[in-house]
Each structure stands twice: as C-alpha cells, then as structure tokens.
Image (cartoon, rainbow, N blue to C red; front, side, top):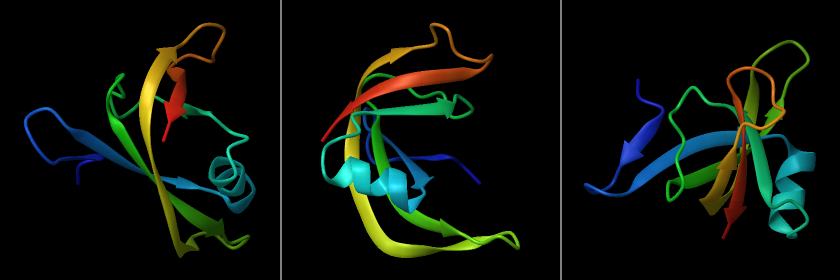
Length: 91
C-alpha cells in the first residue's frame, strides 16, 4: 500500500490522520505546521489530506468523516529527532 496518491505527474497527495485536538487547531487556523516522521518522502508542494481520527485506548480507533486539505510550503529537520521533519502548511 502506498502512503501517497499521485493525481498527475506533478501532484502528490499524502493522506494522514490527526487526533481531534490537533485537527480542530488546523480547522480554526491556530496550527500552521505538522511534525511528522518522514517515512513518506514529504516535499514542498506536496498536498496533505488530513483526516480527523479518534484513537481508542484499546488500540485502533475511528475516523470522524471530517478532513481538511493543506499544501506543504516549507520543510526543515532542524533540531528534530532523527527522521522527523517540521512542515509549514497552508490551505
């Protein structure tokens, strides 16, 4: 299974989860970044499809049906744990 969907030769869309408290901050504009393990070869210009996800204490969880789209506008790994990146995002 791929972590990204290609919709054309240029456009890459990564589908990722966000817990409700982080998702709400994205929706209301307070959160303009993502910190993620870079296992998907994120790059400036790639799109993010961020889906709200409620984790279960027993494991697993469920999607709420809410989602937002964002574009990666900036990336850095400065002062991050190995393999992690900070992505500036706009939507």
